[in-house]
Amino acid sequence: MYTTSRLEALKDLYDHQLNQDNRFKEQVAAGMTYFSFSLEEFAREILTLIEVLEELKDYEASRSREWWWLAVWSRKGFRI
Image (cartoon, rainbow, N blue to C red; front, top):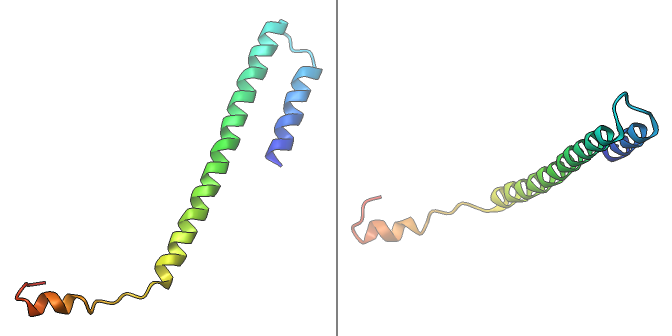
């Protein structure tokens, strides 16, 4: 939805005359394009990060916590 809106906004900018010269219109369009593309890439990276964190959470929840191996240390005289 964001991508579609971004493309429509850029098309509107090119279709309608701004009160400034064409160079200004090109600068505004370039700035808008760069910002919106960067924002879209950032959103994709955040979604990837969320997926990885959810996988990590699931992995941690599925692991059983066993502490039997600490008994070896206590038998050898080490304090826990």
